[in-house]
Length: 218
Image (cartoon, rainbow, N blue to C red; front, side, top):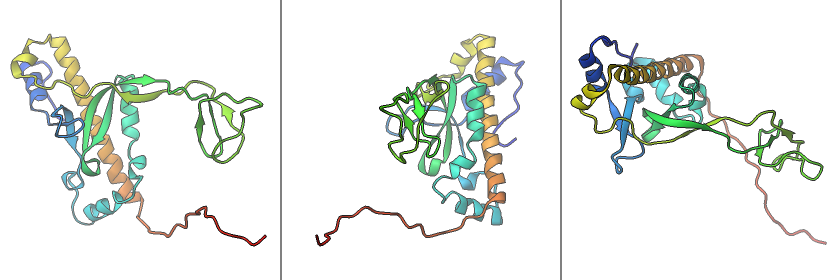
């Protein structure tokens, strides 16, 4: 365990103090002052040293590195039945923050099996090709289930007295939520450490096709 802490759930005071003392961070920016439960996942705060720390800094220089380590966040969303999610906030996604959320259908009806482009229209004789790669689209077998943030703050401004006034069941439920969040952050950290051990960062030159206009003699 790195972020997750052991608490005595038999003690109301212990549970309340855990919630009160838990690290918090801004949910959008320091301007709106809204905060929620959070953990700092900056590279130099993950307990890495030496060559592992150097590789970690290289790893986060890759634009889509989060694709390799975000699975625990999706697992957490499923565990919470879509009621909560974890967002990345701050420069270089340096903080993981707990948010309330909801599952919704974005309204897409079909997709392109070749490039993955989504479309709001069902496949029909008049509308069947992908607008990007021109391949044949396919209707989705079931509506998509996406997650979006529903509110921006959890327990902001709560005092020790406020927590102590909660029912013991409600207090434990809140602690279980935050502990689950901390466990998910631990799993993200573990995925990150595993990824920097499995991958190396390489540079390559990518030629991007560009459409231009030119004159041609008739």
